[in-house]
Amino acid sequence: MLADILDLVVTTLGPSPRGERTPTHEELFKEGRVLVFEGCVLGSRPYCRPDAAFLRLSLGALAVSPVREADARARYLPVGELELVEVRKWRKGDPAAVKKHWDVVECRDGEETVLIGFELFYTDYVRQALRLDQA
Image (cartoon, rainbow, N blue to C red; front, side, top):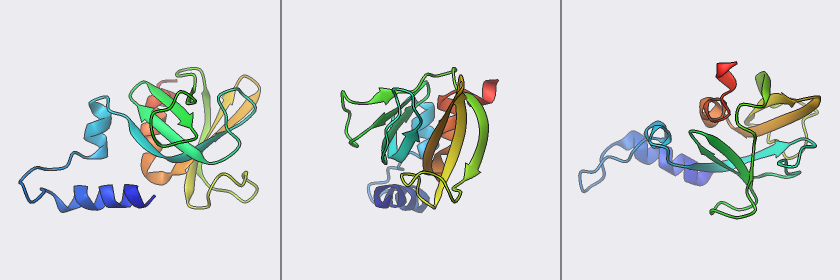
């Protein structure tokens, strides 16, 4: 979370002392770069993890990994296969891995519920990566 805040501050402040502007998250995402941030994916499907981890997000993929760095243990969610139920704030009764200040994208995979929790700043990127707005 602190790294995300620092990224936002640097982006907001503008050019670096060397005159270079730090790219925004939106620019990096549109270039196909990977955004990594704290989050969780919960449900009974094989790509779900029972605890908070890191989400690795790009234009066509969203994976959950136990570590921030690129990792062979990352599990990719099925792009275009999840059905969006709702985008919402944390609710009392959500699993403990979902933090109170997070947004939750609630989806269905067949009959199974899948919850994707993360800081609210990334909501639009998650929806785009999973193609949830194209239904």
